[in-house]
Image (cartoon, rainbow, N blue to C red):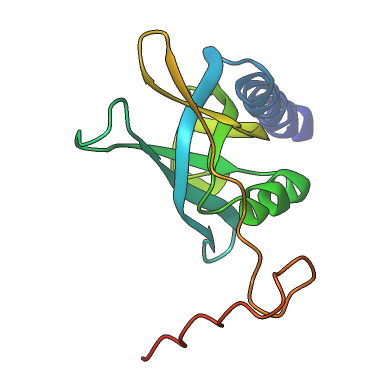
Length: 153
């Protein structure tokens, strides 16, 4: 009696674990998307994942398309947070068959981020990214230069 009840449950649990492992390890597709990270937050009631959106702009003046993504690794999340507002390339894997949102709200799992140094504005035309402007009073700021006015809230 005990074997007929426990053995099927163990087999079902083993098959479910094998399915989850395969769904997390196998990727349907992988690639890169370049744009500006405009939203990134740690979400979830029980299963916390990093969720974000990347604004993709193909040509200046065109409507931005959004690429929604999920991040599981803390190191990648810190790298993305450090580059918010800058043009980046996100390396991702698309996972299909994950049954709940506990793994993430999207199918696109970011595995790495690279700061994009050049901005393509057309076929064969590339504009270098603008250099970072030092904050007033920071090391490297020009002495005697007027300070920027404080923003009012």
